[in-house]
Image 1: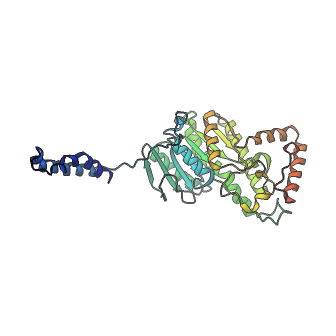
Image 2: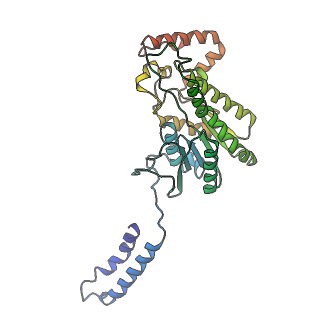
Image 3: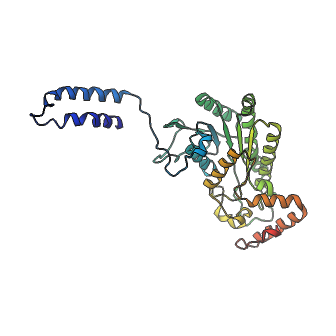
Length: 349
């Protein structure tokens, strides 16, 4: 329809004003009508390229040019941090591939849904692919499809993660309450998914001599533990350790470890927020985490701490571990007593 309007704007002024028989152009009306029809048919026969107006909120700036044209893969891209990362990268001109078990939609203005096909928006493109990140074959197939479509992968955000919803009334068995099957599941998603992706990506990246960037979404829980949920804290601690090992073993690959505290995502259960130790420093938006992540990538910072307090907590833990343990015990008792709205001075943790 936009092309028909283009032809109309060009030729209509030459045709419709010639209603006066005395008009000098009147005798040429048939000629203009013929040109109008021919040109319109030609325009409409050309493949249409859908366009998107670049963001008007200042997000596409010169400082973000570093990501323009980069191929970015994001797991867990349907919601939360993954979706926020996708939008942020997309606004910076990257080609974004979203991997998730759920449908990925709502990334573009006016978009209601997106399928598994390729979508084009001016210079920017993105793909949505159904994928279970715990299944090596599905991950391999998805990566192969992306490389076949765009030729390479520059940045891989291994972001998919899960967290079980605890029963607030069950506090006595925080370490053992989840079954072996649940522990295996959370380790497959929160830890093994990073290994599966790295096995596929590292060989190509090392041949490219440092062209790859691997971003793992861990958690501050992996550095400081998660009071009330051993399965989550332990799995994220393993993810942190894996990120460190990857950075040490493969120095030509740029590795990042994202460790936020509470983030406003579907993982946060409103019913248990009062017993969530990560809430003590407030909850930030997924968009804020995404902006911090892109900034850290540009600065080549291994650690990504959207909550700056985490860095200080880690130092205290390393300086006097016995004191830190006692402080965490006090914090757990404080939360279990229902005093979630009262803050324990951070100096006592």
